[in-house]
Amino acid sequence: EAGVAQSPRYKIIEKRQSVAFWCNPISGHATLYWYQQILGQGPKLLIQFQNNGVVDDSQLPKDRFSAERLKGVDSTLKIQPAKLEDSAVYLCASSLDLLSASPSYNEQFFGPGTRLTVL
Amino acid sequence: GDSVTQMEGPVTLSEEAFLTINCTYTATGYPSLFWYVQYPGEGLQLLLKATKADDKGSNKGFEATYRKETTSFHLEKGSVQVSDSAVYFCALSDPYFGNEKLTFGTGTRLTIIP
Image (cartoon, rainbow over all chains, first blue to last red; front, side, top):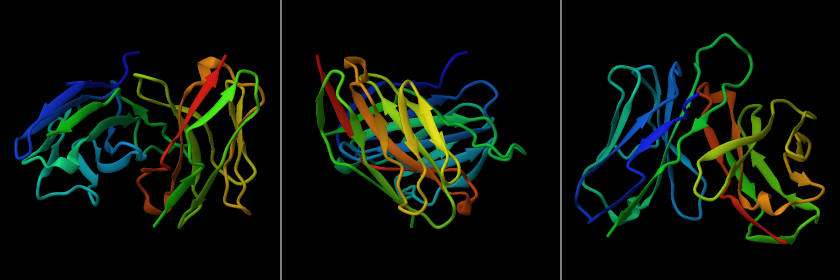
């Protein structure tokens, strides 16, 4: 089974430029997450989708960050314009179905991440 | 809000040594607890989990017990190997918020010396 795919793996931009990251979740996974991992810190949730609807975007800096999952499969995270403090690894994760009737936790599977450096 | 506090690293041990990485948490509801591992150049992987008090999660020789009374979920392994070198993250998912998002600790870098 293919895992969560992300691209690009690395990106270097200058501040005030724009950048976009792409994520392809595991086939059949309805729930998709974007996390930001700043060096020396644990990942922090930015936004969570259930199919193509947003479940939680309370930690997303909406003045510069946007994300979409138009067809309920792939997702794109955009930063416009980038700031120095946006330098981080951006992780995408997916899980089967947040709304599943199963009482067990829906394990999140993580992609390799995109390392962004803003100069 | 919810939070996870992890033992600060980095941690360096000799092969076959005993490992403990401490983790404590605060949560609004009754969370599930996890340990994730990140090997060099790879994505986060679930190592083990526990969903209720007194549950013990185990995998690859690692163990952690959900202690509600001390709000802890310490990771242990009796004899570490060089291949265990990685960054370990403690995390929780709080059903109070209804969305299974993960709240992570800061991570502990573990290096095992042959």
